[in-house]
Length: 144
Length: 144
DNA sequence: GGATAATAGTTCGCCAGCGAATGTTTCGTC
DNA sequence: GACGAAACATTCGCTGGCGAACTATTATCC
Image (cartoon, rainbow over all chains, first blue to last red; front, side, top):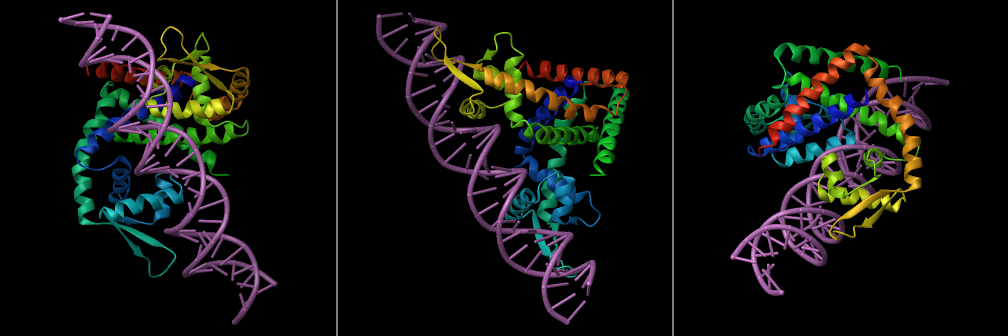
């Protein structure tokens, strides 16, 4: 039981390092890519910092920092919302979209390396188990 | 396939946060506990920084920082090796051992929460899959 | 309708970890 | 036996992220 967590931690760390070195070839960092990825997965290609922060399990302060970096690199731009002027929309720039696309290719190979040890059927089993654990955690956290 | 990695990352992050808040009650941080834990799991109750660094997947510089913190807190002490004077042995102090023991209790409950969603049999399945992925990564990394 | 609370984002100070460079000590080799 | 290479740990500068305090805007309620 304890082994499960330890092993997962190592696997995650391993894959993160592999991904980082792979992404370096495209000239982008892991946390930048991850943020762009969340943006792209949205229909509108944009989201508020709060939404991103919660999806990425990041503190608001940390999110601001990330967006700063991305904006300075020209991959993203901030747009103050008109209806609610407290809010800010983070929108993907064309440059950001291009870089995301380039990064997608190298990322896939880096991540595939880890799962390659398992048969397709086993991968499904694994995914199912992980999903159930996640769902259980989400629902357990709700009442708080 | 991509989902597997994403879910694992979230689970790991989740359990790390839960563990951190739990460990705070005992007055110890996650990275401190993790280091103590590695020390305790050794017969001699001590290890060199390099050994710890590789076991914890940490850079040498990061390891030095951790040991500094632990030493300042009196949980650990540095002993220069006599045979090889480049080496340093990190040894657990009585205080360190006590704190580790207290931390073990709260940690267990925090980590168990995550795995609780699965039946014992499923836990074994999961552990087996994870283990195989780890072994595969280790052996693949060897030739480099 | 004006005081008060809640919400969204940012700033500030701090910390753990990294990479690169450094100081020591030991090993290999000639 | 001396000298260059390798091994260990550390220092230094930097960076991403966090919590707490702050600002600005909107919602609530008497």
